[in-house]
Length: 264
Image (cartoon, rainbow, N blue to C red; front, side, top):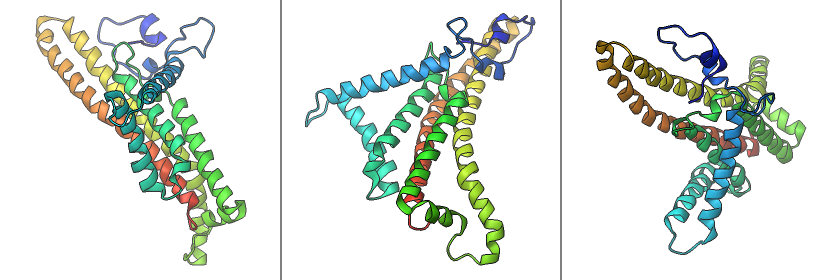
């Protein structure tokens, strides 16, 4: 597991140095290149893994699928049916490629956080969720403008049908803030915060157990409990990682549905 400059090169105390936000600021692996960092490498690595997996899964398609083909079709079928058809409706197929790409990319980069020798969730660096949220922000607004025209689309956002006109004084600014500020911010920060907090919690118990193991006899006895908690948290973190990929993609599908609706 990589730690920050402050943790690896700074002066260490004899006591336990708890992990903090500095452990997410990883040094570049190429001197002088600030973009050559582990999170960026993992993002490219995830694209390679996803591409290879689905190429192999679909290369020899058969009526009776192999285990690899079954796994690939199950993931695609889940996104296509549960996040596309059931949420968006009859126009869902146009958006399945984006939803499928979004879900698999987030899922793999989240799971990196519990993979031995990698142990870093890419989405714990806030810039990645920001970019994904910005793309979703552009997609659903573009869909809305294409479907309704920019005037009708903005009118539908600012003036909700059936609301008393005096209420627009309060509701219109709130709706504008919701569509143009709150949605992209909450979409990105929810994913980032969960990955950041989960990884930090794992670091606390793993590094804490290591520190206890190197202490006096009394502390050595307690250290296994820290590792047991870390193992339990790893399984819990896996569920959170899958859930966050699902939630991000589900909200994207819901925003697209709202942009397509006659009244949104």
